Length: 182
Image (cartoon, rainbow, N blue to C red; front, side, top):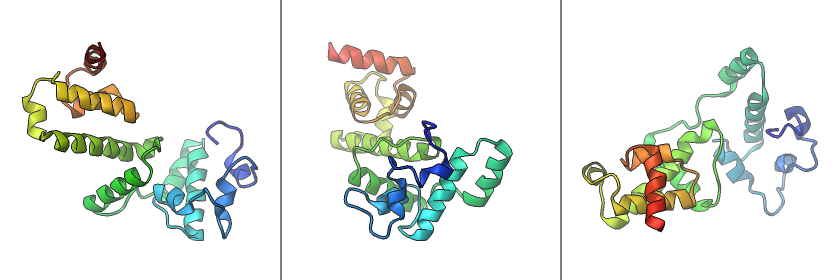
């Protein structure tokens, strides 16, 4: 759909897509309907697949007025629940699928939570705290090392890294990483 090869209405019959295979009673090996649906916050059921179809219909809709109508009808946010439950879900998804690159504006929070989890884990391993981020210099070696790891393992951009690690201007992140590699 994103590549405009087929429309949402054609997707279920499109032979090169795994999408129609998720509607089968027994999903074939290699596909995990539960994971596919849980990313969007839907249950592993026919109802979950219907909600997924509604979501895809909304994503494709080009008419702003119709999109707003569909948004009100289908969407209540990417996650409903307490903050701790969302963080637990984010951690579970990171651990179960470390190689997944999350994309799309509706998954921005999940991406940032994943990146933040890596920062928190790295800082804990170094014995650093949030106060250390503010107190220590912007180009501290340990901050640069975390930034390098984020750039190598994730799609986190310089603006997010610079802000999260208190490293100053985003272009400084690139310069510090380059200097540390020399």
